[in-house]
Length: 93
Image (cartoon, rainbow, N blue to C red; front, side, top):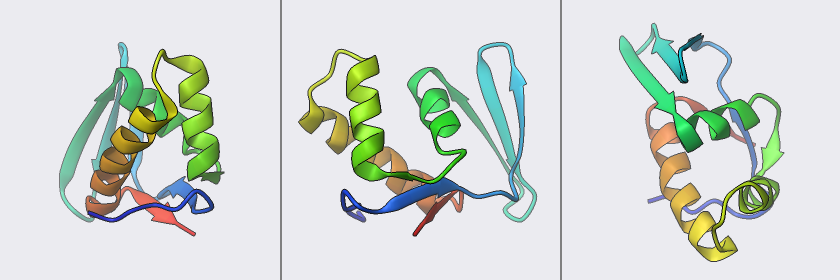
C-alpha cells in the first residue's frame, strides 16, 4: 500500500461525474465504467479533496471534526486514499 507523506498535495480528479443523492455522493467514472457511492466520513473527505490539500492538513481537519486520535486518523486515511488512488479518483502532487 502506498504511504502518503505529510507534504503530499491531494486532489480529486476532475473527470469524474458526481451528484448528491440524499446523504450520499454518487460518482461515475466513464473511463473505468464504474460507479462509486460515498456517504458519511468518506463523503466529507471527498468534499475536502475539491481543492488541493496536504495529507497533514487533511488529517488535522478530520481530527478536529471527529473524536479520533491523529495516529488512528492518519492510518485509516492512508488506506482510504490509497483505494481512491488505485481506482483513479485521486491525484497526488
